[in-house]
Picture 1 (cartoon, helix red, strand yellow):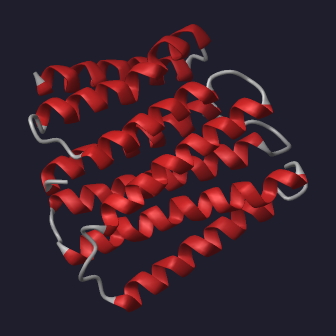
Picture 2 (picture 1 turned 90 degrees about the vertical axis):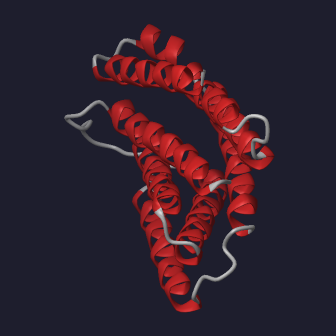
Length: 219
């Protein structure tokens, strides 16, 4: 049954990305709510009867964020961001339970990288983004970066395919959010590649890698 849900996820993901590429909103609207919900079902059935509650809650929060970001409007954008911040906090709590033996120096160095990247994104949008949103968006990206740091700590504490996938997924999640924030507040020409395609391919990859990594790592 788990592989059935994984296959459905793959179909939904490919269909959604095609919809973004050809810019057919109806396809994206139908498939977007299916993405994380199918990963939720995949993880739940793969780990039955003892799934990780924290991961399930994080996936649920991410699904809610997806749904809240679908309507246009600043209020929906803020609500979706809050839901995704909740998902990051849940991921942090989960990863912190397994990041027990990470060396300090690599963690500090990587933390500086994420701080610098967050600062760069905020610098790039400083003239276009509403000033009241600059601090919340910065805090959100820092929250995502902290999630990445704990994912990295899990990899250092217990190197393996599972923890490597988790960290790769965390990186992809951070990249997706940086692109989302940058493209939402930018002037000039659009990218040659549809913007939502870039955001969603990194996001879908992130959610799959974190979920699959958690399964392999026994989270």
